[in-house]
Length: 428
Image (cartoon, rainbow, N blue to C red; front, side, top):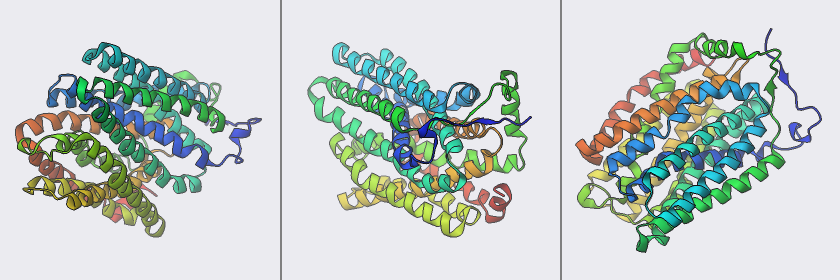
């Protein structure tokens, strides 16, 4: 018997009285901040704590493993309680974890191993938050509203990564110059803790409960069948090829970008101070992603997914070309740097709108969309982990220019995979 969703009867938050605009942006802001704290900001923090660049990048990459493994426990969230329950519980846990990290830095100064343990907890709780929010989005909104809010998701998630991540970097430099950044990082983590406390209270008040699956119709012993059904869908292999290829170029750049901006020109970087980086992320970076997400949504609306994907694949590779160009310039004027960062973020956001819709259309549909979507996003996270692990040694061997050149070369085959006829077949 097919699984039957439990409706939100009797709960006003389960009705259409509460617009998705009340909770979708804040949920994806919360998701993006946890992810960037673990996979990007943690690398800079750990290098400040005494690790080498390669060690910090490797550690931050491995901290992303819970986002890879989340499909293994996504069925448990689909089977138990409501999705709103897991969102609120995970955000309260994130409040505690970030508060502990801030206290650790405030009182103990340098404590790299303790911070690794804190960020491991953050990663696990962040992955649970991801599962619940994505499942709520897929089950509480119809397909038309999902399409409308995909661009909102992208802006909110990337906005958290840029503004939140940039603010963490800026605060670490502004407040911590005299004490090896420990005070600045303590304040930054305390700010994260405060945000997650607010988010938990807000989401408890405005989120719909979200449909869950009845254990009667979906017994626990069938969880393995749910996972296997993902691999038995039509057009699985071409769909998973695009799923795995899309994040390769971005994954190679992801961990390297902040170090490229921070490191001195003698080490191949641009030599920017942390306050400047935070300002660039909050202005040019956020402006670029807003523009890119808006154009991505408009392009999908006007042309449809199959006709848009090849253009979006080219956009996914474009940031590597932009950063390679910046690394080749003997000196980078401020207007060129601002324009480059804005363009790189706009191209990436434009591409990611199409990628998210592709995952929803090609790999998530079925009776268990939460589990299926998290299998797809887990595959994406695996690519991000593997490319992040590779980027540190590549930077050590080839320098920043070499990493950007490799990212450009590795991302280019994606354009061929995203031909219109292929997309029309796998998203029908």
